[in-house]
Image (tube, rainbow, N blue to C red; front, side):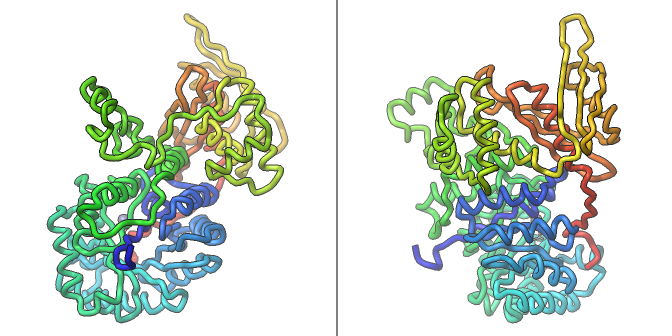
Length: 516
Ligand code: KIV
Ligand code: ZN
């Protein structure tokens, strides 16, 4: 594959993906996702918007410290203070990129920025030059390019490339464009911007009309060599182009594309699950590539065809994107070494012997309750132990629930709070409802439960239930997770995990807010 034929995959799950209402992630969660993206060989990871809050700064800084093989990018409006903050957050990175942007559409310039076009060009150039003081790798985006005047776009792009932008990203910020139109826009920009050969052309498409992936692919066919995308298509409003769909479309239709990515597609399903689990955004069963039914054949005619020759109805192989039959890897007699080896194969590293011992002890406890231990169970174990080590104010000490036909379910909970134990009992519509009321009687968090979802990690009635809850408190939203073979216990763990997260204060600024 020649240089020109490489398609750069820029993942913005940790930045635009996190802008999905309710998808906020802690710094530790971002690092875990970043490691999975690095393992998948994503070229650029946009880790966040450092000026937004101290928490966002810290998350970008931690990702920059941890990741070695991918370029780490931080977002900054075209403002000195944003760029300086991004430069600071990215300092520990092996390779860093600053992504700066300013809106260029008439409606954004007039109504949001209240700036004249000349001022916008001047500010864009100034921002790129400032970003170049921190890194040679600078990306510029004319926000709402999809609704901008093409002559003005050419003028801005020429100026920022002259100022040192090495990537120019064309966002369809509001998901307004149609594929043929967006493809043509990219073609014309590359043809008309005199110094277009000095920068990589990138695209960033939103999915408001369900066209984000199609628009991105048309852009690639017309010369774009970077696509910005997110795992599971997460992102602001209807989301961004789904990474897994873009990558697999290009790989499956190599007859149509003169480029390919370096991505290790076998990591896609693991990444998708991790992001879904952390954000609490479930993957719909019929979602392309990563939905549970994406490779399932129901009709007898299809099944017959696939049995005779799989290509009759399959354009991709499930194993190429990381689907494997649930592998029973271990049971209660497996040793610590076998456990560590299998975890390493799943991409899980332990930072200390203590971490490994803790996870192994959990594995043994689970193996006592559950006959067959699958890869998914092992991954949940790690999530579980990391969740417990996170900033724990509240800890579950004991839980007793009573559920009987004809009787009102009740629950008695004991929590430890800063070393002291507190107990409470409550009744409710079901054992989970009663348990949450009992917890609330102790904690008095005054949070609003926005989401409660249960998934079984594997099949079978002894499967672990994986619960996600979303809590809101005065506009601050967090997701909590918990897993256990007992779904009431899993539910209680998820609720406590969310309460532990919501105790952290966090004032955030939105990247597309209008003060520039
Ligand atoms: O959608 C958008 O325009 C963005 C920019 C910051 C690139 O997310
Ligand atoms: Zn966006």
